[in-house]
Length: 441
Ligand SMILES: Cc1cc2nc3c(=O)[nH]c(=O)nc-3n(C[C@H](O)[C@H](O)[C@H](O)COP(=O)(O)OP(=O)(O)OC[C@H]3O[C@@H](n4cnc5c(N)ncnc54)[C@H](O)[C@@H]3O)c2cc1C
Image (cartoon, rainbow, N blue to C red):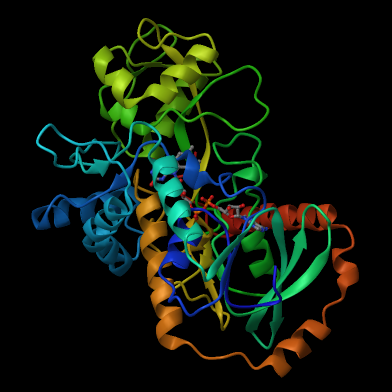
């Protein structure tokens, strides 16, 4: 890794990759990730990505997003996202993303909870993998962009509320060193790694949020955490919880209590269904409820949900003939580093995009399949803004900022990352105390 870049991006999920893709070819760009590039939540997305179904769908899609978000969303952000959704999906198609198609060749769409109609484009039940692989392949072809795996961001290089790059660690050699950048983009994903039960990769522990808390960069709604209603229940709860996509319910699966009776409307927004499940578990004194996929035609299950079928089979369940046990788990982070509609944070030269940021799109609760779209779109807007507002770095100032760093602080990186994790947990608890997340269960 070199010691200067025009743009330094933390994260190889869809947000980090799409930002890199939209920066001009003359900019030297590095994209870091904690492990290998495929270990991001973007790879795990199952259900799909929303696409407005023509201009006449604007109002309905806008209202669904606002309603799911308890109207705490920023309406301008939602408007931009809804109106840009066709452009984003079309760009993905141009990249070679193989979305499911109808017999006439048009894009097939499915439905998930909180949507009043079908508008979600998908690739089987592994849409995120399909999108991220195509983005990664394209970014790898760019001569100006270097993907730097197994390199952990430990801190910002900051002075006077201006960001000059990052302190990073090469995970293999454990060398800690500064990297200067004209612009730093945090695209570090969610915070599932701080929870015992989460669908997220364990390595996502909110490091971006932690360094912002440390340097007084504004954050918003950090107690706004989405619990997904349906993850596969297993007795061995260590590791990542396996998600049973909402589109399974969108296609007709139903929830059942211990006596196999239905107990809720499965297509309500996530927080509502989650609350209903917790209530039922308490009433039945069980650790899970049942999800019945048998109302979905078997050929549809095979074509649309092959990974879910396989995972359930591994756990000893045949979705074609029996119900599967499901339980809610932490899934998504609506809050985050405060960013405007171009990804700018409250610190000069520091941007935040994707799940780590809070630009107001999701309000108090994210509507299903809005996050890939939001991450891709606002990362693209950040890249365009960096390009249009570009100003060079005063290297004397940057060196001065770096010279005030005490490298002794990074002597034990694991301890530092654990402290970051604890600072995130503490900040969430304080935020919840100050302004409870009313959708939370
Ligand atoms: C199981 C599952 C299913 C989902 N299904 C859908 C869906 O169907 N539709 C939808 O729209 N959304 C879905 N989501 C949500 C969506 O996948 C994420 O919100 C989105 O992909 C986030 O993208 P991102 O680029 O912000 O972060 P991520 O894709 O999570 O990437 C984060 C990156 O940051 C890096 N990073 C973090 N900390 C550091 C550090 N300190 N140093 C260096 N690198 C670091 C990581 O290594 C990683 O590369 C799902 C999420 C999960 C977990």
